[in-house]
Image (cartoon, rainbow over all chains, first blue to last red; front, side, top):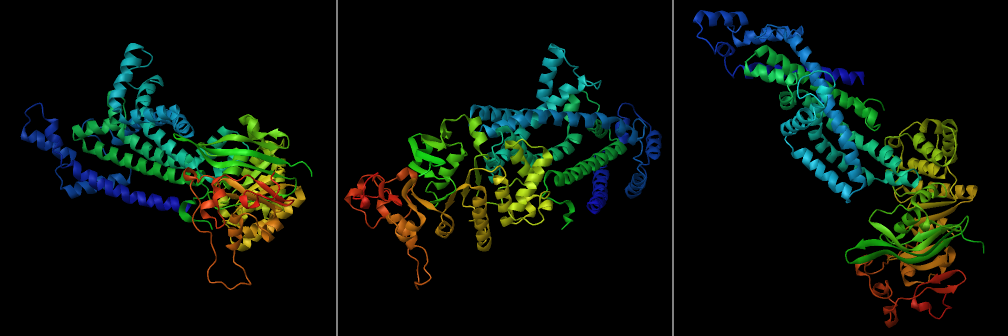
Amino acid sequence: MIQYIIRRLIHTVFVVLAISLIVFFSIRLTGDPVAIMFQAGEPTKEAIEEVRENLGLNEPLIVQYGIFMKQLITFDLGESFRSGLPVSTMIAERMGPTVLLALGGILVAILIAFPVGILSAVKRGTAVDFFGRIFSLLGISFPNFWLGIMLIIVFAVQLQWFPASGYDGWKSLVLPSIALGMILSGILARLVRSSMLEILNQQYISTAKSKGIKDWVVIIRHAFRNALIPTTTFLGIQFGSLLGGTVIIEQVFSWPGVGRMIIDAINQRDYPVIQGGVIVLAMLMILVNLIVDLSYSFLDPRIKVGGSDK
Amino acid sequence: MEEPILKVENLEVGVKKDTGFMNIVNNISFFLKKGETLGIVGESGCGKSMTSLSIMDLTPASVSLKSGKILLKDKDLTAMRKNERRKVRGKEIAMIFQEPMTSLNPVYTIGYQIVEMIRNHQNMTKKQAYQHALNMLQLVGIPRADEILHEYPHQLSGGMRQRVMIAMVLSCSPEILIADEPTTALDVTIQAQILELMKSLQEEMNMSIILITHDLGVVAEMCDRVVVMYAGEIVEESEVHELFENPKHPYTKGLLESLPDVDEDREYLSSIKGTVPSPSEMPEGCRFAPRCAFASEKCQEDPPVFRVNQKSSCKCWLFEDSTAE
């Protein structure tokens, strides 16, 4: 197990190296940051040169990359071209809201999708299943920005139960979490339903029933417990992509997350912020996947992580 | 004769279709005495598994009971509420299945699954239940039972898993054990051990067994009485010696002839011509007639069950002259 984790962490180093290469060079194809900075006025050539010199943009690309990597090894992500703040501080500030929103979204998705998926499977072919499947389809088909705006109109503007935007206490977390979770719950409910259907046909479910235990105990303890294995994989991957992929929701709700920060940085060609943001997200994603992989051995005793033992 | 412990009367089980009710099990009746082993024999698809699942109330959702009674002593199981019926399962009637490899839940330990069964029906503390589970594992001859208790199903072989299943279903001392092809999926040597084990536990616990199988060798080894099923009907019911020495129904004869004989040197085994009709295309009258070498005009009409002698009865016009039941 320990050996496995170490091996995975070594992989991580190579992945980060590859990502840093791609990000570093690709953003430099998008245009000159200094030109954007001076969009408004008519700068002198000297002024432009001075800024370029200060930001280290006059060095050859390969040297710039070298400097970037050297800093990265010491966990120094550089400073923002725009604000001059250390990128690590900026990310640290934004990471909290992002993780919170991702967790909120997943929580909402679980609360909706687990009951819907389980009921759909158990009551297969009945009205319950029909509505469950319609619900999943709606969840999958809704554009999430539309849902977000609808939620704001109904619950923030009309009813004024929750704030429409911003990041201020748990109340402000509710609407964006629902917007995010509803979309996710559609896919999740389908996954839970199909896994449950497959498992309910297994012989050990007949065995469990033949023991005379209550129906819901059979469904939850024997069937759903097994359906958790594919579900956890899905949620793990989703959590990773939610960290970086909630941009639209963050935009709609003015949520101060990492996704929005990176989008802003791209618009402004703020190289260090883009690089830092992408690399930190990538590392988080790898970490989450590692945790998901490790969780298998707890969920499914047949899986021994790392192929050790026996 | 003592009162049978289980009586199945005119049981009809089938699937509701747009075109009407399609019978899988057609009007069958049989009984089971205390301490005896009743074999239910027949080809796959003859309804023997569906019969046992009906007794357990474990039929698939699409299958329903149309009519008939299942009497456990004097209680009619079919008249019971779902919840009462559930309490019978495992406590009074227990069942083991064909596939020991997939019969146990892969994510729980052996001990957990046995204890779940015990605590469901008996008022025991966790500790007592684990002790009882350990005793049961030792009873079915599992080595290092105290370790196995904490292991998962995938760590055991098929034969071991079937032993665990037996230990589990017998942990609440059921009066009836239904074994649906319990040894079909196992190696021949393991088969013999499992059958031996079931036999000795049956004596020890004074339990009745319904053994569902297509293997006549197993029947000869284990059973006191046999019910032969064909296309959803019981065609013959007989004591086991009588069945092998003096089979009545042409179908039973065909089954026995298809067994290899050590003394005889034959290149091919004989077989019954044709195939089992599907439930949607059942022939009128006797269902075996189209494949039967003795079929006559009379077989257009559905034969009743004739009691041939003290030991056997048969659903075939050939025995019309015997006193009808």
